[in-house]
Length: 149
Image (cartoon, rainbow, N blue to C red; front, side, top):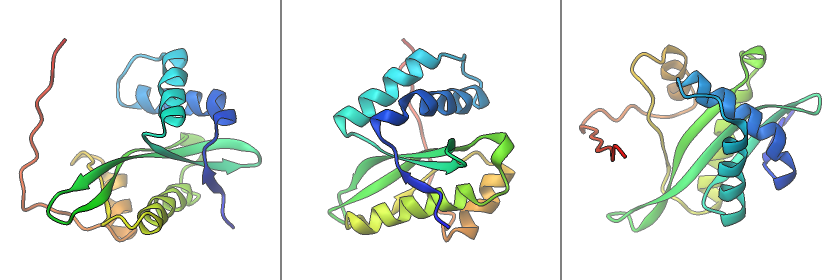
């Protein structure tokens, strides 16, 4: 049974709470109003795709994808930037359903694939992603430059 769907503007209050939990999980300060503003902008400007997982009418997880492009393939890629399931609802298959939504998005938009990154210490993610058909691409170095404002 499918428990996922595309997020709508009506989901914002509950989605912002989940997004805030996600940010706190990654050691950021809680700020639900800012989370709601950020997500509202993404939905209104259509610069990301967000899918939610529901259980008994409650939002329990989400995935957010941003479009990027491959110059060599001359096609869109989707960056799976955020995946989160509330800790009380883990182990029920919601993450896999959300990942399937991401893969379906890639197919329906004729994208060349879905990219993601996760920490080497994320044991759950490092088991989940290969189980969902993702391959570890370790032949490149990943670099980051941060603008410390």
